[in-house]
Amino acid sequence: MNLMTTSSFDLKNYLSSSRALVDEALSEYLPSEKSDPAILHKAMRYSVFCGGKRLRPILALTAADVCGGDIRDAMPAACALEMIHTFSLIHDDLPALDNDDLRRGRPTCHKVFGEAMAILAGDALFAMGYETITRHTANIGPEALANVLKTISIAVGSHGMVGGQVADLENEGNSNLDIQTIQSIHARKTGALLKASLLSGAIVASATPAQHAALEIYGEKIGLAFQIADDLLDILGDEQILGKPIGSDEKNQKATYPKLLGIDGAKEAARRATDEALSALEIFGRKAEPLKALAEYMIDRKS
Amino acid sequence: MNLMTTSSFDLKNYLSSSRALVDEALSEYLPSEKSDPAILHKAMRYSVFCGGKRLRPILALTAADVCGGDIRDAMPAACALEMIHTFSLIHDDLPALDNDDLRRGRPTCHKVFGEAMAILAGDALFAMGYETITRHTANIGPEALANVLKTISIAVGSHGMVGGQVADLENEGNSNLDIQTIQSIHARKTGALLKASLLSGAIVASATPAQHAALEIYGEKIGLAFQIADDLLDILGDEQILGKPIGSDEKNQKATYPKLLGIDGAKEAARRATDEALSALEIFGRKAEPLKALAEYMIDRKS
Image (cartoon, rainbow over all chains, first blue to last red):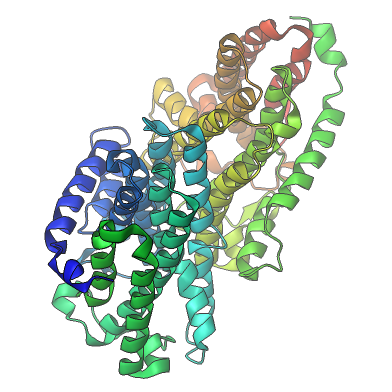
């Protein structure tokens, strides 16, 4: 590791310029609000353009870049991952699930468009993710394309993101979970799609098996660090910056890392996971700077 | 057309043997009820194995066969289409949408597993559809694979099935729709996935452009006939055979073909659409028999 290099990398600028590229592409790929049915496309765009950090697309683009690919080739998959992430947030916020009124400081999709439209906007964003990948295939071989679609499908499905969400619901109110169970829930609920983002970028960039394996470990470790940081933010975060109330895990008697390990123990676990993520990047040499900075950002973020 | 040939074809046997093949494959592709999270996989299997006619998979297999392909190569896409169809039924039945307690005579997914699980079981079935196609690719070139995924995604998304569902919701209680609007809603809501089923089979079988075009017209026409038959069943059907109450369109002041054209006019329109579907099949010669019989079945079915 070269900490000097890492710290001199201008992450803030990297995040904002990457985000601008992603937002531009998302706006191009998503149907216009004028296109029929207008209300559905409004709901889809409302939720996609609701202040997201674009972490998943940025991970996909950065992974493509670090493997020697062109980030433009990874853009359709990157945007698809954001659409799929947004679909999962819309459904998670529904009254039958987390029943959240606010997301990033703004009313959730079902508060604005009603429950029926929120369910369907989620479904349509999911489909639009696949449509985006399969429509914009310039410079991507059909084999890579099929591989990206497989990677994402497995990450989303009943053994991935949706399965993690179910396991989370099933264990609601059970504050006695052990660390392995918590980890298994989060590895599926959030980790799987973060990892799939990196791997999608790697596949599009024709990564070597060693590069692919390195990004897989990196993805697992930052996924873990991300979740611990999330749990910590729910205790130590600033409600204004978060755009939602803190203390909800405590209120919902949720088993969290800080609850099991204490605040300092959780911070140490996040640091350890981040260090392991950084170690996995050695294979990329100096090119790893953005991924290193992103790993640090995962545990230092304020929202 | 050779009506003698059509009528001598044993559709009943064809449907039941195809259905058995599809059910076997579905059971193989879907995660076991023992696999974690068990409750999610139970909900997914409950809804998939709830007495469906398997029309979409049978159309996909039959289209592959008529284009000279091997039906085994079309099985993953065929089953994916049934999973996606089931996902759409689960979400349509939700309290926020059609609020239906019964589907094919059995309690709907959310009545058995609760609303949260029904939403997530739908999401997981959608993902599992893509996963199934991308995991079982023997004898399918990656280009055909990507093409199938694109065809299905567009058929499902905001300009297809989900868009049609939104347009339907938006026009609820508006019994003054013209025939073009009704047709446009149904072409998206049900027609798009029926057509995508045929085209998926065609793509897997490396259909010629002429075969592809013929199946496209056939798909459009049987989709139309299917919907008119659906509207007629809601007036003339047998509740026991249907597994749900009739008269719901009248109760919900829904604009339907019989309402606009009268019962006889609707029957004539369905017949006309079916004849046009049959004409499109001429290119396939004697091989078209199952598709001809399926077209007749669409308007003669009792459920």
